[in-house]
Amino acid sequence: MDAADVVLKHWEDGREAGRQSEEQRAKLTNMLLVISAAGLGLLSQQGLSRSMLIVTIALTVVGLYGVIASEKLYERFHWHDEQAWELSEELETLVPGLDLKQLVARGRNRHREKYKYISRVRLHWIWTGLHLGIAAAGLVLTAVITFA
Image (cartoon, helix red, strand yellow):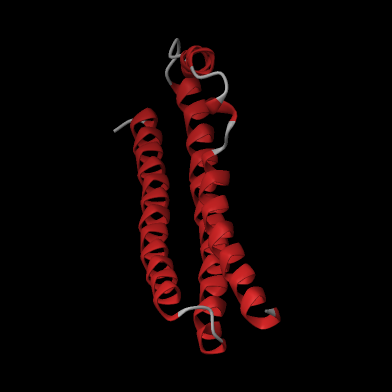
């Protein structure tokens, strides 16, 4: 096993760890969406009464937890991604003529041309926005119950 093989193995491990962070974020979001849907279903059946404050406050907490957990999992993904780029640069020095940067840049440019607008939207903000929406719904419903 030469140095390039060692670097490639570390690169593969890092990419797998990054994928795992994204899968955990998806599973967490699905679980929190089910909990939120159950809470909203209960609210729709029971109505907005003071006894339902526990549900609306729980929605807020679930949403805020989702924001924090999603941000942390994004941070972990980003850490693994940065590590993979560093290892890619090392691989380029070990394998002359590989030119990964140019290959990736060409593919990225083609992709951005094809998806001009949506490629600007960060997936990370979509995940975070979903959890913020749950927290906001909980806050609004809490306010309606408290002040109505």
